[in-house]
Image 1 (cartoon, rainbow, N blue to C red):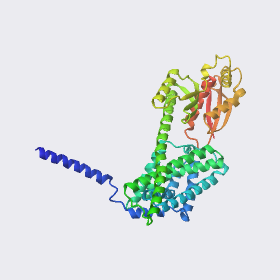
Image 2 (image 1 turned 90 degrees about the vertical axis):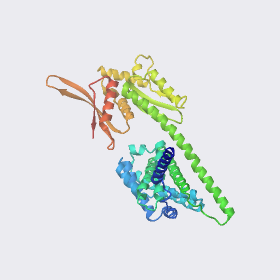
Image 3 (image 1 turned 30 degrees about the vertical axis):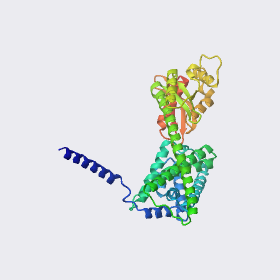
Image 4 (image 1 turned 30 degrees about the horizontal axis):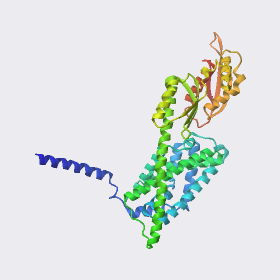
Length: 440
């Protein structure tokens, strides 16, 4: 019985092992020579490929400019961005320095054409307003790295199959990581907003490194044959060049991943704290600036005060996560300002607001200051107007102070944003009758 039990246990192990091998094995269905030929064929950016690249970047720029995800995805479906980057990963994996040189050259052509195309598009004045889709590509976080690496793995595995049925679809994952940052960099160049250009190019560079790393990883896992050289000395020199190149790519990728993970964790910790203060403590928070490199947080608050206990709890939590000596800058809580003898500009505006609430003089007297503060709350606001509406129920007449806000056409959640500004203005002016309405 014991023998039979051991045989049964061994049978189950073999069955599980066989199931896992059948499910996840990619070696048996790999066509090495065809994969190398396909990747090499996709490296050159010339002729039809160059024009397809230009048009796909143009479409993607328009999609980002209108915050249309569908249009951006459409551009990704036809984008040939993957060729040179996969070529770099392949050349490192098979020790082919000539292929590496060719891939780097075409990669430079690809970047230049993309930047020029997006630059020309965003040079047209009517296309120069910032959109959420553009702003989202001004800096990387750890999720961008995961998208790039997973996209690179998916594409090289799809390329290695004997059947190429899903290669084009897998290429969309590559374009997801590359096209939006390049278009955003072109936007930064066209508008002179260098923080857009720097952030987007950094994001593009990070994604490029991880896509190439993914290709290199699978090429070595599948044991693609190394390139042979007749001259042994030349072979040694080329091997050294390849190893140095691989080191230069792989080591920074690990460093960047760790750094971006810590930055994302830092930002999310702050965001969760701010969200908790807004939802559970009734604190209105705006002008949020999180600087991971300087370990500094800045934001302004209106309405309820943030308790010292909550701030100390945030500092302790950040310290436990390895972010020591974080500096938290908070604009003076407006509710604490009234009793101070020396008033700063914000406090003067507060007292003016209180006078408004008590009808000591009209909002028109400080309309310029209030409108600037409203614009600081959301830069998607195009115009602010103010008027007093007379309302009658046929028994009495009431006067309703009303702000009219015009939003950019691509703005989302306008009703929710209007409500937030209305709540802020009611707290600021201590007038619960005040209303905020959106206008076209």
